[in-house]
Length: 311
Image 1 (cartoon, helix red, strand yellow):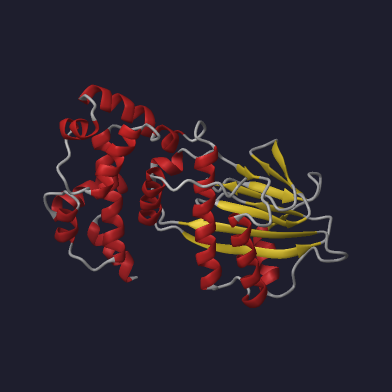
Image 2 (cartoon, rainbow, N blue to C red):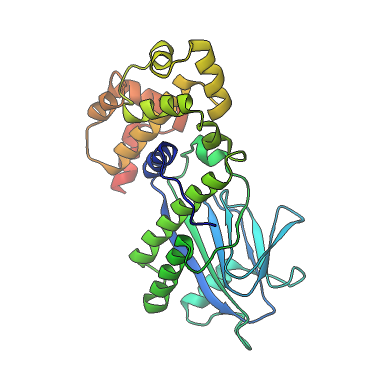
């Protein structure tokens, strides 16, 4: 059942990551459809999802990879890959941009006849250029099935649908916020149900590695060393590095530095604190040290980022 969700330390860690990456949800298409119909969607840098509110459809991705989404199912593409949707795989397809424009003009397409389908399509954006192992570990496509009417996920979807019917989905703050909650809930459910599939979180089920991650997230300004981290979690330096590398895909101190830069990016873009204060609060010796680190990894200086903020 989709509602089975654990409230554990690994999800607290995931919440910290998602809050730092500042995901922003939105619905870009919600429409009744009359068969036959087909929609094509180009590659984007953002996760996208499709919900079959009524009727079943097919989703195609990467050549001949294809799946059937029955009514009350959700298909989630974490990498925003190019894909298509149709009530029949052989149907011609129209670009999603044309669908969106027609809906915005109150002239929706594929409505000549009895309504056979209803689709809700959304996306989740975050600042370009940011990355984290939890995002990199997700597969190309996730398929959520067996959603019951009383499931928390379907309750969220119903709330979004109600808001759309009342006020539309363009520039609708309530719809956007509910979409963000839906995205996080889906991730949380997926992590619970697929421990052996998603390497980043599944391997942090090793409580010692999870503890090391939590320590660095809770206090990124601390001068963490391999010896100190190993002492805190009961591992030798060599064992810590090996297990952490296997679980996260990078060494502990490399992860710490990457996390510090992510936190610095968000503080620079979304607060008015000085560069030096942000740097020291995250364990950098000075604003200049932070600037060099950001230019090296992200290709942008704190000053340039602040200019973007003003723009």
